[in-house]
Image 1 (tube, rainbow, N blue to C red):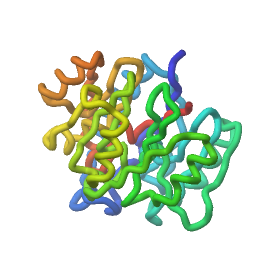
Image 2 (image 1 turned 90 degrees about the vertical axis):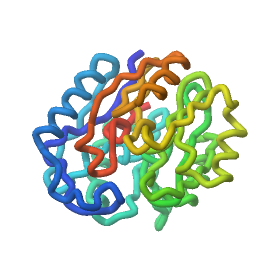
Image 3 (image 1 turned 30 degrees about the vertical axis):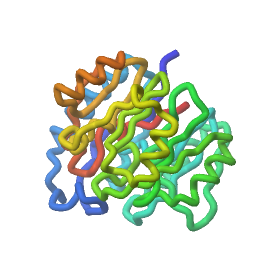
Amino acid sequence: MKPSLLMCSPEYFGVRYAINPWMEGQIGQVDPAVAVRQWTDFYNALKRQADIHLIDPQSHVPDLVFTANAGLMHEGHFIPSRFKHEERRREEPIFRKAFESRATRITLLPKNIYFEGAGDALMQPDSNRLWAGYGFRTDREAHPFLAEQLSLEVVSLHLTHPRFYHLDTCFCPLLDDQVMYYPAAFDEPSLQAIEARIPPENRIVVAEEDAVHFACNAVLVGRMLFMNHAGPELAQLIKNKGYMPVIQPVSEFLKAGGANKCLTLPLG
């Protein structure tokens, strides 16, 4: 059975404000034609392997293209995001409306708790474990709520590097209880939490030169790993673990602090 993913075309995508370090100095610098071409190439490659559902773009929300931040969908139960920054809060009613027909149940977060969806909440495939990031965009207080509502083991990971402000920028769960991650994005207790659950032979450690090109912000479909970038050593490590790296450059979206995974939301 093909996985289902939600995407949004980038007609109105651009950097119009700066709410993360990647956006600094990039306001007005996105090339719309290149962004559309990169997104379309990625979409077409994914469409051959997954069922893609689209949400209509809207001119007043340039970051709507980053559908990973819509919320978290698990077995038909949808937890909508509550965005940290006012600039993205305009997306909330759009995403909620989109899931009225897609979700079997929608549960809102308690007031005054921030949570930025599948950007900060990543399921370990074929398990009951949810890796959950906090520190920049999501509050740790969201984690027990997710655990209770979705009946999941939630592992809290503290993000400490401003350029890796969402968990999916520096961490990618894989099959067979494996993970790919950039250790410098986390504090020591979080690294210990990862190492306590994932044996050394199942960890793909990503170097800085790959991490800053958002190699961890990858979309896993079967054994294919759709990525913006992977240097020769990382690509070989990935192949050695039984995966096929598929390089789909989305450099225009890095100007806003997002890449391949940010552009998709699993509808599991």
